[in-house]
Amino acid sequence: MRVGLLHPGEMGAAIGAVLVEAGHEVLWLPRGRSEETARRAAAAGLTSADNLAAAEVILSVVPPHAALDVARSVRDMPALVIDANAVSPMTAARIGQLLGDRWVDGGIVGPPPTQAGTTRLYLAGEHAGEAASLFEDTNLEPVVLDGSPVAASALKMAYAAWTKGSAALLLSALDSARATGVEDALRAEWSRSQPRLEARWQAAADSAATKGWRWVGEMNEIAATYAAAGLPSGFHEAAAEMFDRAAEQAQAPLGDKP
Image (cartoon, rainbow, N blue to C red):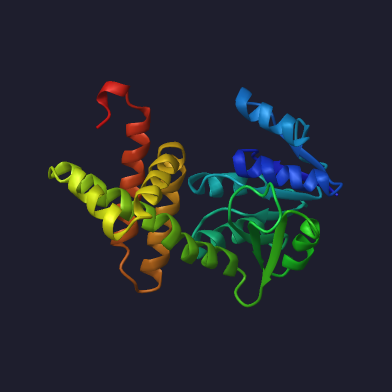
C-alpha cells in the first residue's frame, strides 16, 4: 500500500522503515522540515512527496501538542488515518470527530522498532483490524483492543503514567537532595539500599534532556486523563514541569547548568 507518514522523527522514521521493509511505499513531506529529518527519512527508505493525496493510509506520529493540528491538516483526505500519538482519550475522541469514519486510534509502547519483540502498536476502533494488517510479521507488533474506540490512547496514558511519571519522580528526588545539600549522601544511600537507582536516574536524566520537550505535552495529557477519571492530576502536572525544566537545562550554556 501507499502510506503517508506525518512526520519522520526518531519513532516515525523507524516505523516508516518497518513499512518499507514490508513492501509498502511510504511518502513523507520534506517541505519545511529540517536536514536531520531529511537524513532520517532517506535512511528509512521513505519517498519524498509534495502532498499525500495518493496515500491510502496516513500515519500520524507527532508530539502530543501537535496531534490536533495534524489531524486538521488531513481531515478532508479519503485515506485511513492511524493517529498513533500519546494523547488522552478525550483528545483522541476530538481527533476522531475531526477525521470521521476513516480513523483508527493508536498508541505506541516501546522504543523505535528496530528489532522484533520490543514495540507494540495498540489499535482501537472500527478499522483497527485493517490498520493492523499493515504491520503483520514486522518488527512493530500490532495489538487490536476491543471496546472503546479510544482504548489505545487510554492504554498508552496508563502505561506512560508509570514509565515516564516515575522518571520525573526520580529526577525530582535528586533535585531536592541537591537543593538541600544532601546529594552525595543520597547517592551513597542509593548505592547501599537501591543499587539500581543510580543507573535509572542517569537514564531518566539523559532521556529528559533530549526528549523532555516532547514529554511535557504527554504528561499534561495524562493529567487530563486522570482528572476525567476522578483521580488526582497534580502529580503528572508536576511531572510536566520537571520535564520542562530538564529541557530548559539541556539548552542552557554549560556554565549555567546546575
